[in-house]
Image 1 (cartoon, rainbow, N blue to C red):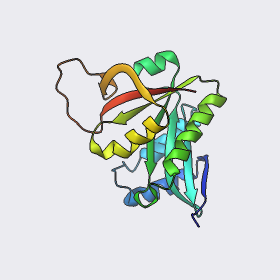
Image 2: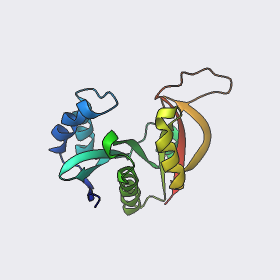
Image 3: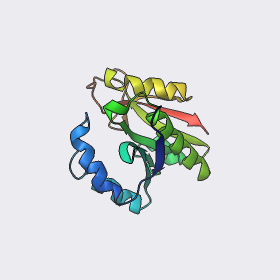
Image 4: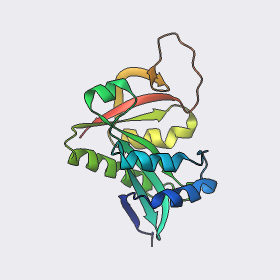
Length: 170
């Protein structure tokens, strides 16, 4: 029988637990990253959801109320950010439930649209497929690099900062 996934809003004490997960993560996080996130949660700029299995955090996602991406910020579109699930818990439905929690929360705050940025290299392939399955579509403004639009004909590095912005009606 599969373990139950519990999704809940993060609390201040989760900062230390998330920081302790960093060695198991397949992406580099500065040792101050989660403390900074908890500060932004306290300032009500963002909300964080954590996924637990067996009482242990196995993933998280942020919902940013004040996107750095100008078209989202201008339209009051909340942005899903930094969806992460530990490698040994992927394909268990954790990411799906974390995204659903963000959508539900945005809806509860009277948002009629939600957005996100998805990376374009193969490391984001699973996320790309997840977002399309959930009904996200490109926002129509093309690629962005570090949240700035990429001009036609420009050369950019294909890394974690090259993204396609996507939106979904709630």
